[in-house]
Image 1 (cartoon, rainbow, N blue to C red):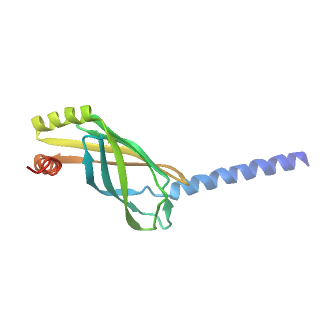
Image 2 (image 1 turned 90 degrees about the vertical axis):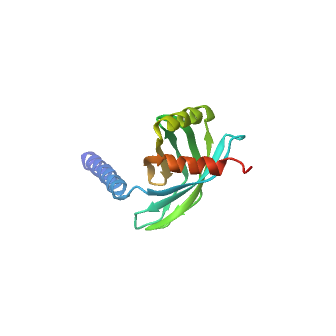
Length: 159
């Protein structure tokens, strides 16, 4: 009788683990569609971005936290840490407003490199915390000199 009970308990534990693997493998990672600068404050070393995120899953996905690092020309210029009570609706795109703290020294070093190279490579690597676990997200690309000049023009006060 004890052997039968032990075999039954072991079998049940394998079923639970295999179902967890199926659930985790069936959840698709959300995609970052666009990132738009909303505001920037040099005095407060902060910026606010609107991040458009697409949920490719057939079910809503609650997002509890977002964290990661933003790099510009290999410099770690900002850390992201935000919490949320929103859920990504199934097969839809939603905009999250994400505040970040900027390391101005690193940003200035990256900006100097931009002026020399004429372009800037950027990347975001981080994680979204959801009820099904930690989901990696990333975005990378390159800004042209024209985009950088337009950004600087928008950030400088009008004279």
